[in-house]
Image 1 (cartoon, one colour):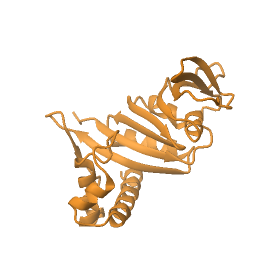
Image 2 (cartoon, helix red, strand yellow):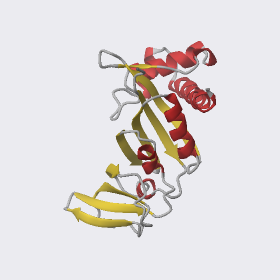
Image 3 (cartoon, helix red, strand yellow):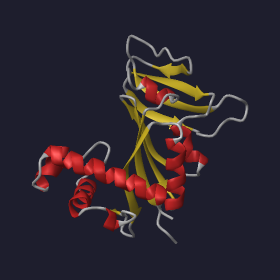
Length: 213
């Protein structure tokens, strides 16, 4: 039986996700969603927790349902259903974490195999301008996980080394266990070089994911 794949993607340029839009002006602590449309015309429904501030979200899709001086909980809905938050449950993928910061939505989830991952990413791309694969690992028998590129030969040695080091040192963890500077230092390269190689490698990873048979 194939081991579950742990995937993390960053989604940017989302026009219809209330959680992502609110994160541009407010600190979002957590996001939960039932994902699927209610079937009654209400669209996708979820909840998010914001740090309480003097101002309140102006988005009419977000309704405050509880809170105190520190945190406020809002129920949000997207009547069009065109929102990455619900994509995971549409494909039967358990969400490990959904978070939003400065307009960027990060989805961390488990998928039964690469075909499902591909379907999720394709659906997310239909409602976002930019999608980047941050993590693609497979569970190991000892409880850990290993970075598994779809086609190792597509990466230069340095690109693969950067991806593997970033994964092993916890650069993609939340919260991060290391910084770009630390990973770059371990590879004896500059931060700018690390960032450049990482961006190219992540783009190749996405391309492989969407074109692999």
